[in-house]
Image (spheres, rainbow, N blue to C red):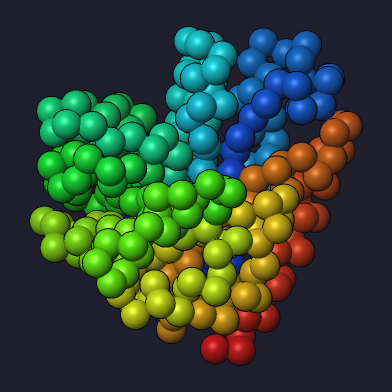
Length: 272
């Protein structure tokens, strides 16, 4: 998928919503636990109910790795289902990988070739040679952690490097790497006041924005400083959508929550 393809989907759906598929067997409806693959069935029903409202899905791989080989098989079935039924939807492997070059190459092959995700999240701490192996894959995107939404995010990201914070140095340095047009960046919604400065550094890259909903991030605040003429935002909501209901109507409840966000996004797009 190209950047132009993703922008086209945003405009077609009047949505820049990303739904996080973070499946916890302790939280999904109990009736699904009787099935052979409750994780995949949960994802399938969420996808069937919300695909027309979202432009991206983001499984966090930890929620699948926690269940061993069966969890990984559920992840594989989920991405295969998405690629078969909804190839126009952008897929994100939220894996937060990043290691020395030859290891990163193997991580990239795992997510881009074997599982055929459109993108993967990557940690920048080990520098250019840990990230550039991901960037060589044509029409695949590397989503670099920049400013995260967790409470401790500023422990290191906010430290001063010379005259500026470390997360800004990450953004600036990443723009010097080979194939940097294949980069996107994670910027948490709970840090909405930082978007103005971030857009001065990366005015034309997509930002993946977690933290709207359960973590307290506000969509309007993010868009005030983060949106561009081509939108270039992917606003992620996980728990707030997929766990909106916990009975046999859970998928319908998820659809209702997704629709609320999509309609808010449509109004924002209309006002541009």
